[in-house]
Image (cartoon, rainbow, N blue to C red; front, side, top):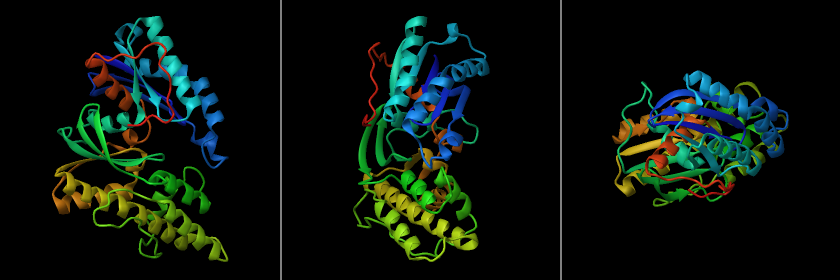
Length: 337
């Protein structure tokens, strides 16, 4: 089965061709980072217009890179939520038009299910995919959650953030520090040369049984700290603060994941979502896995950030079960897992 995946949930216009839910024949992403950088964050209307301008060229590029024609495509998988409503509409309406014109099935895919499925994409650097059931930490700009993955498309939320997501905290703190957009990437870069213990920052919800998250207090702590300073941090001082912020976020993600593994009795952990590309988090999780003895599965960084290959593989699983979306498929910006 060869599936065309389409992803337009936020500020990446992406298309991919995936064979049998494993082999990536093409994976094309048109980023809007430079477009939104001057605003310090994603502007939904601007994102929608960029998607309109780039969706057709991106799909054509994906087909060409895959060496495929429309006759080769067995189905179209598209992100239908959650995300920005205007951005989602561009992808979904394009997918429905293609499905109708080609007489191919279309399947709407939950963006979060796509992140969970990314680890099943073939990659020589990865071990064999994790068995079911397993635990997943999904950590991104909009979501931070612990999920019991019982099977393909069968997911149970067991822990989540009570306010802000880890990715949002990274980006908002990056903006406070004048690092530009996306701030999380810059914090990760600076943290590599900083002292993680230089600044004392809060780790919320430390209860022994708690597996929920909270990052709003961290943002407030950084804001208060900066307000008390007479000058903006720079040089090694800035690197130390970045390292301390990253440590405050990563420590909580690792601690709660270890706690959830013990509580659920699992020995396999998938870490996915945009923040899973963070080098500090990847290193800390690897160290925890070595210490505790659980198996760790993290997709390569390019599969952690938004892409269409993960949507194609999740869609392949749904199509293989005979699921189809109607031509009146609607977008749902608040679609739950």
